Image 1 (cartoon, rainbow, N blue to C red):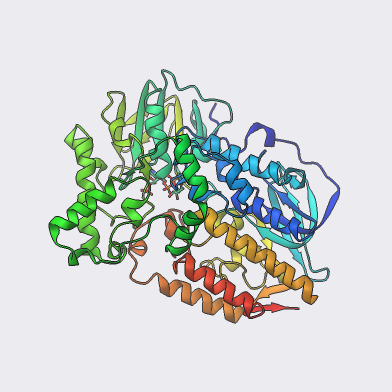
Image 2: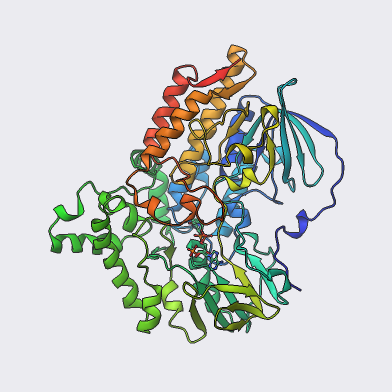
Amino acid sequence: MASVREKPIEQQVQPATRPLQELDALIIGAGVTGLYQLHCLRQLGMNARIFEAGGGVGGTWYWNRYPGARFDSESYSYAYGFSEELLQEWDWTEHFSGQPENEKYLNFMADKFALKPHIQFNARIKSAHYDKASNRWNVTTEEGHRASAQFLISAVGILSATHMPDIPGAASFKGESFHTSRWPHEKVDFTGKRVGVIGTGATAVQLIPMIAKEVGHLTVFQRTPNYCSPLRNATIDPETQKKIKASYPEIFAKCRATFASFMQDFDPRKTFDVPEAERHAFYEEIWSQPGFTKWFGCFHDIMTDEAANEDYAEFVRNKIRARVKDPVVAEKLVPKDHPFGSKRIPLETGYYEAYNQDNVLLVDVSGCPIESITEKGVKTGDAEYELDVIIYATGFDAITGELTRMDLRGENGVSIKEKWADGASTYLTLQTAGFPNLFIANGAVFCNFTRCAEVVAEWVRNCLGYMREKGYTRIEADPKAEEAWTEHANSLTEGMLFTKTKSWFMGTNVAGKKKAFLFYAGGAPAFRDKTAEVAAKGYEGFILN
Ligand code: NAP
């Protein structure tokens, strides 16, 4: 029987009515942001609690347990920076650490700061309604928990609402099937099986080379090829470990200085100001570096100038062509429909070589889409592919999806889905008018995730501390400030090549979702400065009473 697993076993509990939990603050999600937010609020002495849909901590690193899942940021640039002790006690074993270690790290952090007793696991928010009379949020979960909290803090992350394509017949498939972010907790045995992967984004690109070695046969259904670039991961030897631990201040200072808080930053020169031979030597140099250097370390104008972008894109295409033996397959893997970096660049290890294996078939469904899922497998316009397992690596309803899927209602009963029907609007990404005492700490800044998660969690902590000190009980974005911020945020994307490509960055991977760049694109330093300035001016743009 087909099984698109939405929940691991431990979550499939019968709803029951449970006692009402009275809280100062309820945080949604025990991922990177939620855990630190909880620690911050407990430092303030607040009665704060996390409600987490999963059976453990980790968020992204709890749910995405597919083979090959790992950081694309350097492990030590993604680590929490708030505790010197935590930094010194934790040894990263690889420069780009894998999911099991990342999940272990987040458990280590949660245990070190004694957070787990304050987390309600297996508690997926069903509804959250603001009650004006009591100035509190009334919350229920799918599992029957009930809570009332003065403040509601969403820490659901940016990529948590799974996106399943609307392909007819999915339920009729007789084999096993799952989405990559709902990967079974028990090991999946692919030995000898005929496996199909739908999608070729950053997730599939990590997964495919791992399972290609194990399966009997692998069919990859690709609609759009990507500019996948080598990760160049390596283990960390004891000497390097010592150096990393001694240089955290420099690592974080570097991240603070860059546009997206990664360790790399764009080169200030313009592509065509650099003579051709020097330019190509530069491309080779960044290509040989680990991580995102070959994106964020390139000339800055590749993000805005189509001709500059095309010069580098062709260099990358040739790198792809050189790795795939069959020139027909190679050409299918070469992206030609969008500029380099206008979508998230997947980082890979052995991805292109997987297509040199005899047991791996690439099916280009761009001109001949998947029509249906049948009992036996995947049917396109011109063939049926018989499979034992179908893996949906089809991405997420990013940034807004997790909130709009909840019954989340602010003042006057308006739902967030209704409010954001014409596109998300916020003030500073942190609040939205009409939803008093709701903080949106999801991470909607184009930023190395933990670096900005810490900024936001500390901002919320400081704001709540300020409110307590001044005797305020309610905070809400001023609609005028929200309008001005949203206009400013939208204006920043003008001229950016991101806006010309279909991707989750723009919300265009989900049918019916309003097209808009979903991140704040002004850069992490500008975000930090603006949020600090607003706080220093007594939370200017917020209505406090
Ligand atoms: P994604 O980038 O949105 O890719 C989804 C894939 O599914 C695309 O190739 C898409 O094709 C395909 N697809 C969707 N519907 C389809 C259909 N009906 N028929 C055929 N193909 C279909 O999702 P993702 O790979 O899960 O990655 C999402 C994000 O997660 C990444 O961009 C990244 O930010 C994050 N991520 C991070 C890491 C990391 O940091 N280590 C690792 C993995 C993922 P089209 O492109 O044609 O729409």
